[in-house]
Length: 155
Image 1 (cartoon, rainbow, N blue to C red):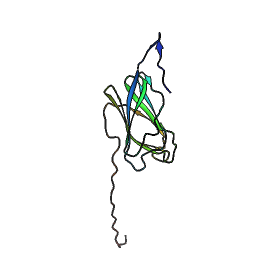
Image 2: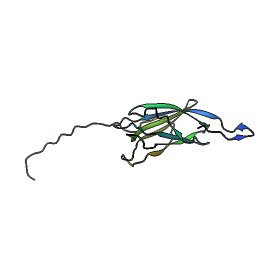
Image 3: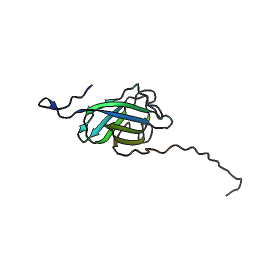
Image 4: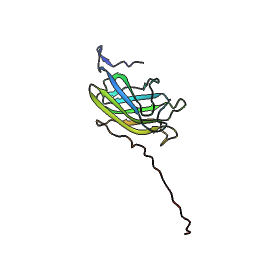
């Protein structure tokens, strides 16, 4: 599939651009997914359309997948819509963040949420607004040891 940009008098109105997209799966037990992940990128000039991401890319716990998305010049990016089709043996996915780069300009899409029918709110797709600052999307998991002492007193 390839987009065809609008033309005026045989000349393309908007140029094609190659966006570098980095998708980072969070560090949670069961965070990786076997499902087909898809992405839409939105900007002031329009959207990229649906891009089903290469399923050979490993969306495993704590891993980052880097790929290219070819689209018309979207202008200043405003949001992404990302999700999956809930297929495979372990479709639940914990997304940390997505970073999109074009011509040394960076946009950050901080998530820190589950895409799973049996986690949090059960959503498989989310819209995430763009920011120009990177950050932490979720807190690390801490492990606690709880010790309970009981006595033999009544009351």
